[in-house]
Length: 88
Image (cartoon, rainbow, N blue to C red):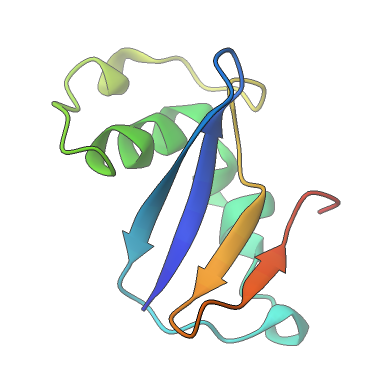
């Protein structure tokens, strides 16, 4: 398990979302799902952002696809190590 920092770009608020899969490392492409894969889309990131604060995700489901509303600045491993994703 690891945590994903998700920033709502319009407010600058960042929340940590727990992700229940093991971090495989950048060399193994573990960042792909967050940077170019399905979770790089605002519609999915809005859901994770809402869940990180135990908010209702109904409003998040209505967000159109795009890649400008939310960003993933880093991944935080369970030992506290942060993996920077700002340039990916």
